[in-house]
Image 1: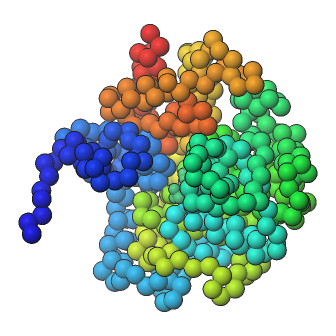
Image 2: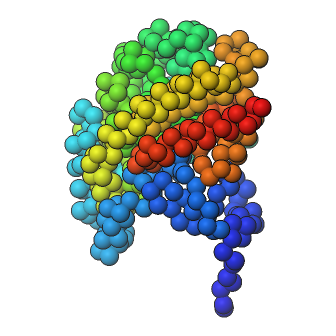
Length: 439
Ligand SMILES: Cc1ncc(COP(=O)(O)O)c(C=O)c1O
């Protein structure tokens, strides 16, 4: 039968999404025909400056040549070996490399296909290692959408109508200084971290397998903790016999201007979860632990048919080479400039309540300055403004994400290869869009 051909238009793609995909896609309305570097091109030849990287994935730039070549070479060799049945070189080489580049004594890795699987696997490993079951995670945190990681996700919006998730999960206060009722606009320090101690005492049987945190909360609105907060969390976790699982699915692979966000806080995770930027767009997830922790898994305790796909692992190895060959350092430098420039917006616009971030992971929190925020702290979140600003930016050819617990945070998470000129354009367009929407 002759395959139906569709007209090469944005509408033709979108209408088939409506007809044939489950109705959960949330579009920035940029159907992509091709992409390169920091540019997306739609089916009508329009170009967009991508400041969101397909949700923080293409860190080494869309279509990074070295990564694509490595994947093509491996495609010519073999595509699937089921890495847990047939040991193969790309998996061995990438796992060895991860042992070299991950913090502290993290050494052994399990490969899966996504972030949510990495988190699920990390919880199983923590349970096996400690012999305990309970987990504490962060309010407003995000760890994925399968039932285990969804249980850890501290936001009902993702669970509504789909509970129950797994049991034995409690949540403690996020280090959201701007809206923290404890420190009221200051940086959350060790005193705020003590909420973990309070939650363990009031909500758990003190039989903890893990405390799970994002080092910088991505979906929660680019929330950056202080060193003191992070170190105190680890101390409390260990005092209670729990492992510290640091979820670097969004922050890893150079996003924060260091290969791992954990590096900024001088905290070595007991288990480190990864995905998103790991292979610059090929599907792969992983969690890495010390040999002592990892060896708690025995044969058959965990498995994934596609996990550790050799093509994805070959790409991932080339990706780390690329990132370490200057891209991460550039991200740190560009991020410092971006942070300063965004901070200026706080002075320029009273609807910019807060700007914060690390490396090329920055949030701009939009507010209604005339209304009080939740619990009377800071100004009210303005999700409508964020939505309109993002649409206007898209119309001007700039893609910037919108997120946060209150859906009012503009998220700058561009490919780390973005140039200063491109960043300047993005910030100028953001300022113009805020101007236009608040006129
Ligand atoms: C911190 C964090 N963990 C886990 C996940 C889930 O990853 P995936 O969508 O690959 O399952 C995400 C996705 O946004 C994330 O940001």
